[in-house]
Length: 568
Image 1 (spheres, rainbow, N blue to C red):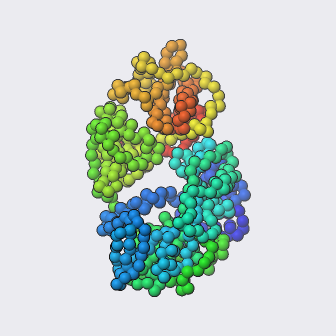
Image 2 (tube, rainbow, N blue to C red):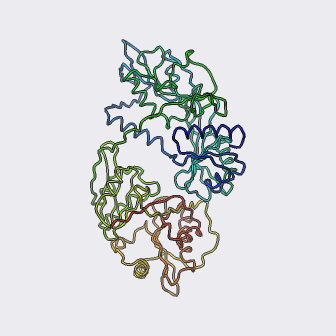
Image 3 (cartoon, one colour):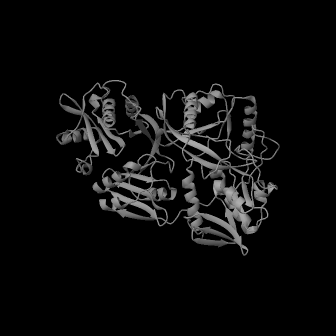
């Protein structure tokens, strides 16, 4: 906050959060600057920091809710036609195309279309669908993780996104819109405004390119509180709407209270969200979505009075029924329908899986009847390494418990005691080398393989020849550097579609500190840029300072982390 009034409101918010047991602390301008590297926040009077906040994807959360509901007896009937609702013979009838569903209790949770349906049923409520927008910007240099920033003075939020990008949003229109006519495309002036404001907040980002943008329709209520509960004067009709843009945060908890209310006919816990608090039905008002806090006479910067919504016990996310099977042929890999399992290596995962089979390694997949493949386990017995790709804890814990020795690589720190590996990335569309190569680097051919193997053995020890026996392959390119006819440096580049991955860099100890490592990295990037491949990624141990320095000199940026566990 940059104003006295904003400072007062943020201080009040701090006290409310602290009284509810939330870990929170206030920040001065220099502390804000320390958390948001590269930013300019000298004019900030007060900041608020909640270190245990998290980021989630609302689509994945919705799928998890649906999966849990299905496992607990819910039946999903997906409609494909025009929807109409009416009451007949004491029950509600929902017609979807040629199919009619009947029910004694009906919940309308139709998002931006809820207002129209309620009005058609003769039970209008004060709701206002409003347009909101978000976009993804590519900064240069790319960024590592940082806390989500809500700048309430600029009315903007900025948070890290995939592959070193940032997500920006709050292109909220202050007018009601028709969800049937609203465009899913973001407005050009929204992106211009977001880009300008982010550049003013983070002047160290020399360029910002818009990569994606979209718009959607949310629903505001008159008092910024949801409407969840019984629709007044309508038997068996319930509603869940008016989340004011915060539905993903609130919907799960409020849905549980709504279900409990319908079953037990007890509504005390949902009193602040009671739709009957508007006895006059529908009222016209401009949407001003905010996050309400509590009813104690305090107010937000806009002067709105806040009331508290109930806390909810944790949802029991027990592990779904998962089976594990082993793959033994490349044909089986081609038949797999792999969902997103990796923040960084989804494009390479089919190739990694085939390489494990080619090298006589172990490949296991986790899958369920409903959710499909949820994890991949790749083991290399010769090198005693395992790589795990999953976003599901129960799958990761199963893979981690498998017997064996060596190292296990994961993208999430599933357990304590892991070493950190930095993810380095360069977007080659924004990159140009800042100096010429000091050492000759060229693409190797088959005749160089004996010398490359000898170098790798000298630098890293014994070599598993199984992978080298699969060469040459078009997706694997080796770069070498020579001194007096001797290969003293080698590195590899994997290319899959529009994605490059650098790996396995080795420089002979006698020829280090000559810039050979950096030159090979730059050569790989020049080779990719010349072929129109937009980005390259590499993994480097955090304590490998020389490799980290070489990557940064070449123009790569740390954008994330992986973790390695050592089994004995």
